[in-house]
Image (cartoon, rainbow, N blue to C red; front, side, top):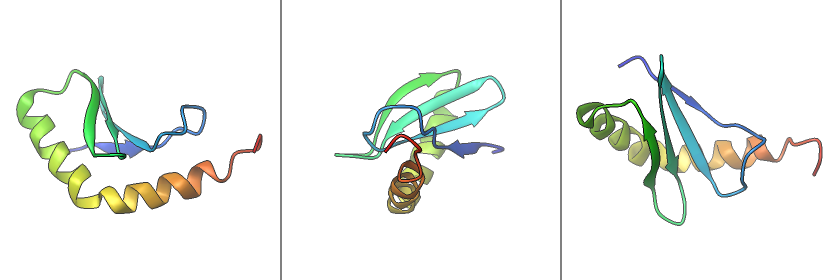
Length: 75
């Protein structure tokens, strides 16, 4: 599966990760619990695999989110 995980610094502060593949995008909340926030285009099979990856690497994503957001110029 050729997907990319992204963190955007111009969004809400609640920890989350975007998953992008071609024209598809999903957003997962990382806290208070890891859960799907939105999905545009991924099928159920893809979402299941992505969810497994988000759960597996969730703690790493949380740390990366905190580090990335800490770099905001307006803080």
